[in-house]
Length: 522
Image (tube, rainbow, N blue to C red; front, top):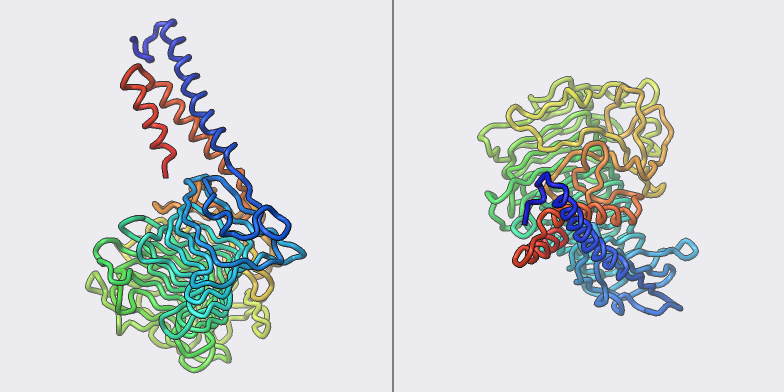
């Protein structure tokens, strides 16, 4: 048989027929898969009365609509979705009330890959309210509260990427080992995984650190975090894992960290059980400290480099702070690697890194209304127009941060005013800190949230990047689930092209099935 690349007209017609046959075959499979997806309605008056009734029936693309105003029991989800075709568990509010999932040792256990959980209240799990031991999991617009041990816990084995967004977590944790949010990723099973947390409000922790993560890469963007017993944020290495297997990096952008006791705000590197030897980037954060210790960064165990730009630190009532503690750090390069530009700190502050440039000192950062915790820079604030442009921010020499966020486009949610995604408007001269002064709060349109850009090997769902490629490739706030259909259609056409070229007789027909299976498999 002549090649499809022959210039003869008859053979071109034959190849066209092959392409059409291949395309029809793949599109038929695609449409069949979409048609087989089901919607399971759960709640009073519906066919199914509990989540456990449907959990074992789920397939890729299925959606569960959970009726609000009702309390449901604990549940295990171990069936798998597929990349771009997740299983969706969606709460449907009734009279403004979400559905509540309550109780059990693990209230919700996500053991199957490719799930989206949204608009659900989760509470009362005796050990874990949400147990994450799968890959490509999204928690969106959930409320997790009153968990006597862990609020969200990621397993050391089996956990991959997780996206947590537009959610509220409070009154969780216990002692020094159980935390409101405690993440991990399995670097052998799911290499390149990402924990991204964005547009969330975490507060009033009962124990532990508000956010503790051992993930391979952390992206902590535009959150309001306050009231931890220990650190507001702790970014460390795998527990008992091989430190040489992967380097764990973290980017922390546009957050408010309000420390209401004497502990440090942030610890990075390790906690005595696992170190990162990683690179860290802190950009446009606002640190608000209360009480006596007034300390910000604590470096511990193995760290490679740290950069800090356009952050503001203020102690309630005024006075100096301890910026950074390095007595417990082990620099993996053998020497300190800290850079930073245009940070604002109180006059007389101690332990200011020598690698910082353009540091601003003062007695008052000039917030709009500190009493009401309106942390936008007011008219006349020294933070106004004082940030270093993104184009000039530099990592320590030879230690560039991988795939950094290219634009600070959003702001944290406003405390106690609802978990919303707020646009960071600009006059072209950026302000220091998490908020831009001179503008009202404006909620983002769904399309605007796609501008979180960069690239990373971790996948959190169908790749729908904006502005040059989404770092995590995740479905972002407000994105319609119908997007998965277009993703699948593109996959189908691309696969059909492969089939049209490759289709032959005999053994070649086997390769067609294999090509398709490899294109859509989990």
